[in-house]
Image 1 (tube, rainbow, N blue to C red):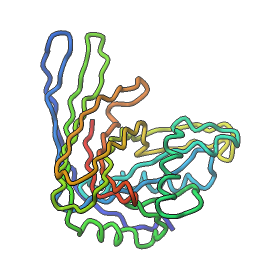
Image 2 (image 1 turned 60 degrees about the horizontal axis):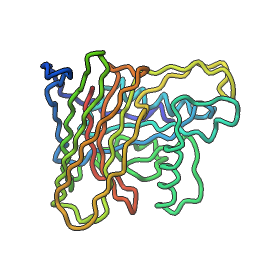
Image 3 (image 1 turned 45 degrees about the vertical axis):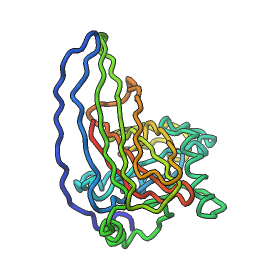
Image 4 (image 1 turned 135 degrees about the horizontal axis):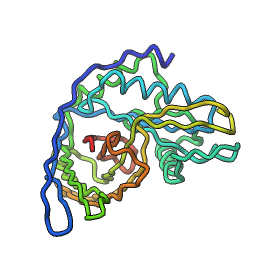
Length: 266
């Protein structure tokens, strides 16, 4: 049924980078992207290479990439979990941090269980695949109550090692949510694994929108209508820079609802 979902065909605005030398560090010019006036839908997938029913869900995310969807309307992210590793295959993309995020989301929604593959659409458990396009459009038609501005600068030393300086500004003047949590996620496309054990033994699995690093939540409480945070992300050598994106999103810490998100390609 997943393969029959109607996909949105949208556009993405390209960004460029110019570099200059400062002392022994090369600093790229700051690139910036703002969230749209409408709400951006966020599709989370909780998946595992050790789960035999997960590859179709992974394939669904890859089909979204092929459809050229715009991050102004929908941002997918795949969180690989560790709790199927015991079957015999350790998922190299999985982190216990992602297990905990899934459990926390279940707790906030008063659910007693977690499972894979699980989709969450802007924080809610999602299983209505046949109406996916309609459900995404329903979210996108809502006016944003929080505005996000994501900025990125690449830092390079003389050895060629690169790190990312990311900053996020938020205006919350139209939101009545008091407990907000902000996150940065490093997301990578075009990943392959040759599985040699477990339920998917012998399969080559293709993954897109894989969360490689998740930073947060950085909390904001009270009546402040503006928030700003800046972090440095260490780039791992195995990450393919041309396939990386940085996602920033904000959620209601009490309910898990994702209120707004923004994405920038590396």
